[in-house]
Length: 480
Image 1 (cartoon, one colour):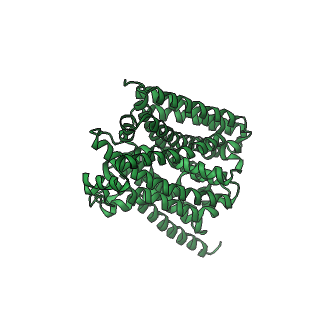
Image 2: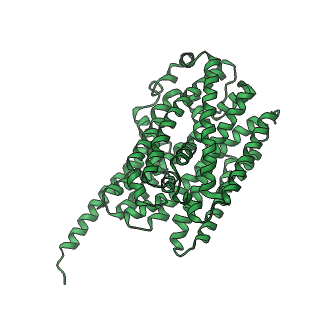
Image 3: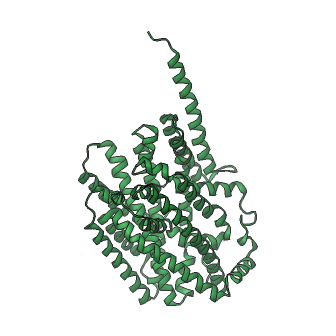
């Protein structure tokens, strides 16, 4: 137990109360399962944009990315953040096609382009694993932060936070999520701007921050950590995070929730501009955090603790309160989105496949029950997480990209592609990507992302060739 800061504790309690209040308000405006799942497909451009921004920025971004800069420097921009931003650009290029298909989930999209409904539970299972890992990351980040600022033991704080976000997500579905995201997105951008401005003045400006950061170790300001990362490693990381944007369940749910194709395009373009500026500032803030902590003798062993330590041990209380609001916003805004998406995956993509005649009330009930169960199990797992935030983030990025990136988008734009080839490629890509990533990140010098994507690409192309030839032979046989 550390000494409790009453200002931080009061801020945390008030924030949770406001979020729960929005959840109760949204509950009264959720009339049917389409409201619960996709906002009744009536989300306008402003709400959609800020909801996407808030969803995008998570504990991975604020705590995990600053922790990564603390360890490896600005090279994070070269692979992870560049991959994410170019992934948004690629999503903008295909969003019109996807929105016109009017599918609600990513497995819906796969079933539509392959013609096989069995693709829905298969893809849904992969997405559940990814979503559950993301929930754990968010809870770890929230628990570390709030424990640092309140002195309440981590294992208790994780349960408090977990139960709160489960409650307001269960109450109003995407209506709760979208409106809380609007508030949280605005808070995040404002608070990170305040933190960066304060650190720049405190440390003598951005140029001074970068010079001091480079003086600690020149590799910290090198685009590839000055040769510590191979070009193949950087390329694999880039591909993994690029692919997640095009294969995230919650990204497609948000596209389905928009009012029309025009709104879908506007919200991705506007969010891309906001996030590009935000992440550039966040990475510099990571450098400032490292310089400040090292210069004050406040170094940390766990990189995920770097930003919480800056808040509690370095920043004035007034600035710290603002930053806490930003980090809590980042964590809860992404957690509720992932939790909502996993509950919808269970109901829409798995349960309804086996119970196609299930009614609206039954589907909403299943969504809510799944939300509670997945939230509670993720909270329990976060007590003793199987890795740092950035490690878990990389694992689910490899899984999603390996399974879905090539076969699904080939199917979207290649109308004659056989659905069986796509399903086989998804299965093999997921297995190879996940297995090799757990085996030290790859085999030999080949990273797991390349192995997974390569397996999926080879499978879909060879399977298509074999199925086409088999079909031609069948067609050439004389009828009896």
